[in-house]
Image (cartoon, rainbow, N blue to C red; front, side, top):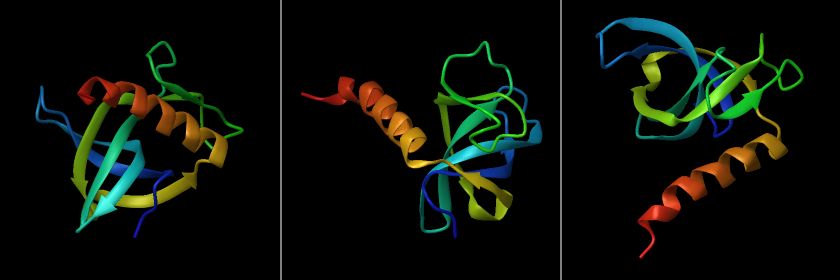
Length: 104
């Protein structure tokens, strides 16, 4: 079982190539064996929320909130670390900004 804010190592299938790679991802929530995650990249030029070594990352990275997908919890090989409450709030606030366009 994984919790919101956990950074995990998981298999990800890319939709454009069908290729499966092992990558880090941020758990947003888990429900009924499905895990909703945001991708993480070490390309620090990309837009997103920064992850530093101080946060627990192996190298400087970015949480890509424009790259959210559902995976089976069977694809996750291990938990790497958990975000602190300040970083979790940053993720929450950015997601709310993106979802505000749904507001009527």
